Length: 486
Image (tube, rainbow, N blue to C red; front, side, top):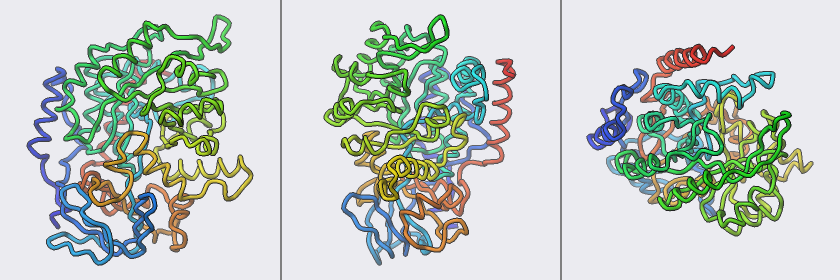
């Protein structure tokens, strides 16, 4: 077995970081590593040779017979016939090599509730996740996010935005975060309220500050960043008659959370204008001075052209999730309008109780088909532009474009290899369309995050999928039984 593909115990620093997370938040009793999780591979010294390389770097042409040289987590060089003395060689012939896919908004804890959004109002997504979320233990948070992280890696997603809106305690937050640490993903952890938290009650900002203060031991050597999962300044809620109406939220809630995040220099992410009942939310934020460079808004289907211009001018971004937005009945995702208004637009999974899976290839295909259908044009949204939304534009949305999102000398090595010889994708024709129209998670042969090979030959290298599914099934059943969910 080559050095690049060998499996080692975690480095001493990684062990110290994990212990610091456990010690810092008093979760020792909850901190047992899942039996499904093995040791992360070492960061290797490898060269991928002879692949079709799509760097997704703006202005950079594809390399039909390209090499990518990686050493200790860094892309050393990209080109043809590269000299790479001492590197282990990966044969790239027959593969598309590209940056890992980037998810910009995912409630990862909910994957224990996959496919549970039902056929009536009482069993819909919001009442279901609220009722079951109340009985989640910290270990359930860990297991749900571990399952999500494994699916992300299996599907070629190397960076995730874990929008954690079920933080009932520090233990819940740290256990959820620990799943990201142990699986080696890159990403952001956004600290949010529990599903059952009243709209008038702010999160415990002291706990948020404490987490930020300990982030040096929690960041997994810089792979992870911290943010705020915010609720904004208004909400569409049912009134006494059961009709949905738009209500302003209490400044005693939203100002406390927003000011805390800004004081701590944390990025802020918020769901708004999600459906026909919530409108003018961006205008309301703008009047308060709350729209800034780095703000991320989610869904934003019911957004006016004026609000789009506000976002573009400020440098804010929009995360869309067409699969969940249509499944839940929010409406048709806005894509072309945002791009026309020069808004940074990126893609997301959102939540698997609605989407069923976390296949970013499927999300890309849906986005392209939706936009072309709405515009009645085969050519409205080209496949390469969709790939940008899932890679470099996603990196920009999360403030990570200098580290990931494209393949460039000096960036971190977040790379996937897609097999073009499978029966559902071949023969080799137009690579961008092969990825958007044909590719599936099963076509992802190799996944590298920060130079660690976390999937190879179609199998995860540090996660036992069978053991994980057994553990997740027990956890999911336990949640449903404790909630008496029928």
